Image (cartoon, rainbow, N blue to C red; front, side, top):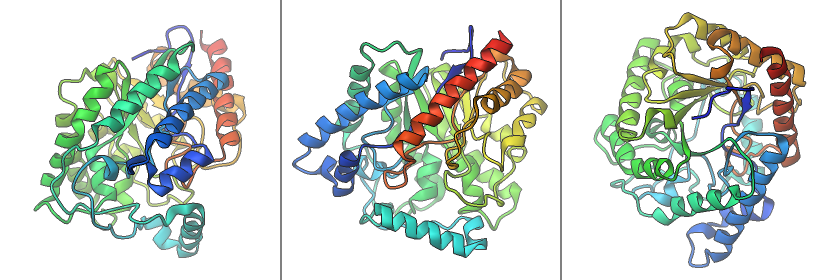
Length: 382
């Protein structure tokens, strides 16, 4: 995994807005229908476009933008067996406290297409990988899109077992632990395929923070810590055999414009997060609820080779951060672990779900400000 040896490198957290025609195909389920040839071609061209736009914005470590996925976690319903039921409503504690806002966000989701049938299924049968062509095409598309572009590195995202368990209800396995390990044992081949293709594997482990105010909002911090200890165990088993330095893990409190006043504090979970087999940690550090937590990283015993990938761009605010603000945020983390171990990023994805994307022009404008801020910080730090 690349370090910021000569200057501050930039990246993002994976998801980027999909073109409207591709989004329409995803809603229609074309990717799993007999007429999937048009989808395959459009997904490939969309990855070409996404990589080119990232490079133009000055991003050093690029991704495929998860163009072929309807959602960063829900895509498993199309690739794994066992997901045929329907999960309960997603009710974060902060939106329960402010129901007016929750209703407004729900209305926005439905109007944007979020009412697609069975978007969030439940697990109703044994889990196994069934559509290997999906991740093989993703890998091939990114490899093809990188040709002719000068990038530092490329990464691909895959979901953590704990995040699947957070979003998709278990109605089949006897215990949550059994469910977690079944997910991990199935999805590990996707992890390995990404790593064997030479890409950095980003594991989206939102469960390690977000699930505190979703499924475990009524338990103690100690009980929640026990839960995520199990999540980490399942994740580490699934990544066994992949070099630690080829894995980065993404920590998230939920990429939605809510109050977030029930978010678990970073200091209460950071020691468990650091048990994940990963060479880098990507995390939210720009939004108003967590920006101050850069100081937490200086108070823990960090592995000497760990890379920090802080979010210095907020993915919920329409503000385009001033490059000087970005530079200041970068410099805070450089003061903790040194400039070489900081790679500047975004808080979360710009297209976490296909129906809730940040407008494309805004997403890439924010990425341009990210690269400009990194350049300012580099002039000061090198």
